[in-house]
Image (cartoon, rainbow, N blue to C red; front, side, top):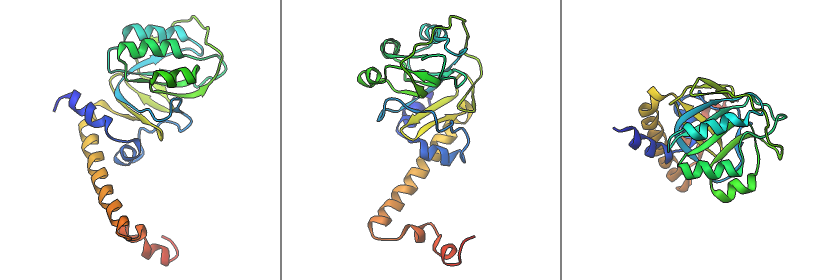
Length: 212
């Protein structure tokens, strides 16, 4: 199956099922959350290694990344040095057809990014702009939310958080998540028939015995 078809299937999934399929691996620090609630993203990572406040490095990425890419920015988790992304950059990113951005650091202009409808995930939101002109690197391995992200790995993000899928595992993970979601639809139907979740999951005996 083509990579494009896999990304389309990935975009229909959620991070919870994906975390289950990967047994919890690849989940970014929960402090990195959506700055644009209700929006999700899915696509290959275009990685950005910034010095704190080095907004110029993200401008470099805006020039280099391709449509469909997710900008994944290692800002060293530093919220004091100023935002690495904002509304005008979001406007350009949307115009370029990028899928969204994940920043381990601060962004600004939250209301503007929401109006743009550009999926933005970040560790902090601040009104202060980054002014560090020291140029960092693009398309190198980065550490974002305590998870290593390589160029071309896949990112899925929604209101629950952000997860990384190694590129080589994409097809396997997508199929596993689809199977999990099909199983959960069956469980949901059983609950609607007034069955108890503890019984469906085989937990009643453990509960009644006082625990594992």
